[in-house]
Amino acid sequence: MSFQTRFSPAMLVFLLWVMGGVVGVTFSKGVMGVWYMMESMFIGVLALISGGSTEENESAMKYYIFQSIGSLLMFLSLLSIFCSSGFSLHVAYSLFCWGVMVKLGLFPFQFWVPAVLGLCSWSSFFVISWIQKIPSLWLIVMLGVPLSFTGIFEASVWMTVIIGALSGVGVLQYRVLLAFSSLVQTGWFVMLSLCSGVVIFMYMFIYGLTLGIVLVKLNHYNVFSYLDHTNFRDWSGSSWSSEVKKVGLFLDLASLAGIPPFLGSVGKFVGVFYLWSNYYISSIILVLSSLFTFYFY
Image (cartoon, rainbow, N blue to C red; front, side):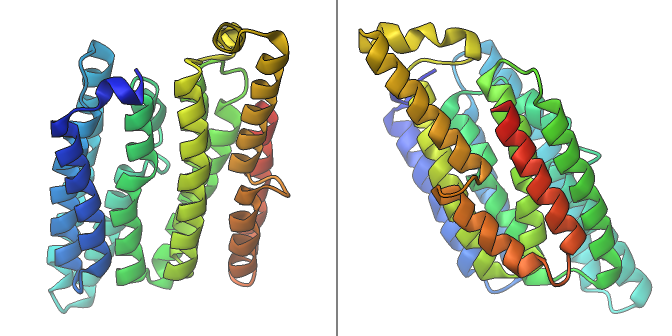
């Protein structure tokens, strides 16, 4: 499903709705405002990812179910924050952690990510993998996570990135492969959101740019798996041009994995610099997982 065939005036309206939600989330001064804008934005996202095929509608339904569960947990956590007792705050942060894990696809809820992204269009893939993660990460930055709950996030991130790195081995479908890669990227997102709001959004900007380039090329060349590489030649008309396009796509994937000297490595280097002092074990696991994703690319 190409970007062009999905375009319509209604899609443009919902895209502006989603982007307005991102702006609203960023400039909201309170956590309830962020939650409200996040849920408003979610309506637009559902409209964007719902398509004309059975697979896309199935993907949208799965996504709706898990996001609704995560939203409910996060709403209950924000309500509990207004209670002043220590027990209520403990319950609030517990619910918040579980809500974030469900919405972002962290362990033990990572299974919905390939199930959803493996069936959606390239444009929906971009929205779910990048845009829709911004509100949850911004809530982490705004609320701050107590030290006692940071360990829960760390352990969840470790398992998520390891599963994402190992599960991509032997996968031929690009959407499923990039879905497992997004699990590794989500680990980077969460750990950096625990450190600095500026760094996480710098990292997300670089990731969104590199991911967008990869998805546009895969969509443009009509390539969905490693078995479709003959489409390069069909599109270009010559074997030489086909090889050039294959190399270009490979270099874009290398940038997505954070391999120097490509753009993606800038985010990884800055991320490790900020993480190393407090989360050096997580830094090592994240870097090794990113290198492993480059292996299966």
